[in-house]
Structures are given as structure tokens and as C-alpha cells.
Length: 307
Image (tube, rainbow, N blue to C red; front, side, top):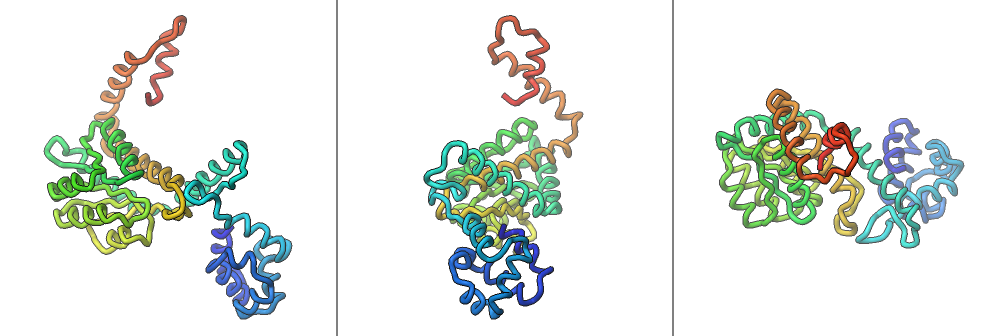
């Protein structure tokens, strides 16, 4: 709802734009204040506040406030921003999935394709020469460390030597050994981890390409924007990292890793990758139990999915 209002501001009359800006500055207060105070704070008349609500598709101020209150609900602190304490399992399914899908669609529309292109090119170039000493390191702490492990696994399947490092001391040692042509991929939900900020600076000094996956506006993102060696892949989401468990942010980071992995695989070429991946699948089939009566064709079909 707030994203839609933000996008509609240029089409509104100047007076209604002031109401919209007041709303976006503090949505929760807007949902509770009387129309007279809303008009006074935005320096417009009371009918203008009502016209604003109708201009963006609502029946009036009461209808707008009702929908706004639901949109800015704080959820359950430290659990999930989109659910309520008394939600039933059916409600949880809808709310959690809708929240994740909405975040992914926002990322799809906002993703900087040029930055993705630069990151894929740097990773593919390093990946082609890992047998000559080039390195790809994935750094993350806590929940982001798990995403780093997922990235290591995906690049490993491409035949690219990559390492996930989540311990702060090991990260410092790893970054110190980087050199030009290497890639350091730093993953952070908040963009404020001291360990990761230190690692980013060390990797930059060593001449490595630093790819940063974090929220725009964070210290880590600002550092990336101020260095030509850094590539920022902004993953913005509505979660307050101080109040909620990383749900949507983790999914966005995994999604970005999938995009990078797919791009690198295409750059490396199917001639190199396909025989290796096919052999991996064939060998993995020996690790599965096969039900009696299932034919070879069924087993072949099952091999198309990742174990």
C-alpha cells in the first residue's frame, strides 16, 4: 500500500502531495490522527485530506485509515512482521507466503541489472581460473553465514572452488590472503556487522573485487558505493533487523545467490559444465533407495532434481 502511494505522488496535485508526504513520514500516526490535525500538519484543508484518500482509490478517510492500519501492522516482534498472535495456521500460510512473494516482486522491479552483470562477470572470471590460484570467498555471520554456505555449495557444483567463511578471525585471515582477480562476496542483513565491515576494507586493500549483498543505506552499502572495487547488490526489504527474525531478507539473499550462480554457469558454458553435472547426477543416483517395481525411467526422472 505504501509503495503504491509513493509511486502515485507525481500524479497528485501539490496540496495532496503534501498529505502523501506526511503519511509516508509516519504511517502509524497518520492512521490514528483526526482529520483536523492531519490537515494542519500537512498545511491543507480538511476536504483536501479526504480528496487525497479518494485520489488513490479509497472511499474516504475512514476506509483509508482502516486499510492503512492493516498495512502498517507491526506483527509479532522478534518473530514475523506480517502475522498476529492469534493467527490460525491457514492465516500464517497466506501471510508468510504473500509477504515473501511481495518482497521478491519488489526486488525484481528494483534490481540493478548492471550491478548483477558486473558481479557475474567478476565471479565467472575468477571461477575460470580457480585452478590457477584465483579464489572466491563468501563471508557472512549468523544467519548470513548459512546463506554463504549455500553459495559455496552452489558454486562447488559448478566445478568452481569457493569457500564460505563465517568465523570473524578466519574471515580476517582469509581476506588478508586475497589478491587482485579474487572475489569476496559479503552477505549481511543489517549491513552493520563490524566483522564484515573490517573484512570488506581488508579485501579492498588487497585488490580483490568485493561484491556486497546487503540493504541499501547501511554502512556496508555506503562503503561499497564509495569504492570502484565494490559492487553493491542491494537487497531492500521491510524487516526491521532489530525487531524481527530474518525471514524475507534471507530469501532475498538466497535468491540473489541463485541469480549469480545461474549467470556464472551460463558464462562458463554448457560444454564445460554439462558433462560434469551429468556425471554428478549419475553418481548420486547410487545413493538413493529405489522402490521395488519402479522402472529405470522413473529413476531417470527423479535425477533431474537436486538431492
